[in-house]
Length: 114
Image (cartoon, rainbow, N blue to C red; front, top):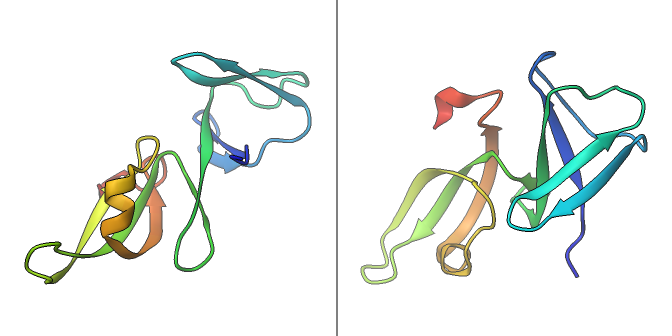
């Protein structure tokens, strides 16, 4: 079963935070999650959902993360490294071709890495 965890990118404060218990999340079909902020702590924030993957250092992967990926070409067997942006779910064919990956930032705090 998929574990539900979230992080919030607060645009006004330019901070990343883990939501407190004052949030109530609601699933909206085709659009992901939105939240109700009971205490008014998180105004104008973007919800980032955990994708049930961890990188080579044990860090949780969330939507919007930027990964440094080590792969092996399926035909030639050559190894190469690339940077990818996580838009949503990581597809199974991408996962099977990856030897290892590490989170190097996210699109909110490190847009220059894309």
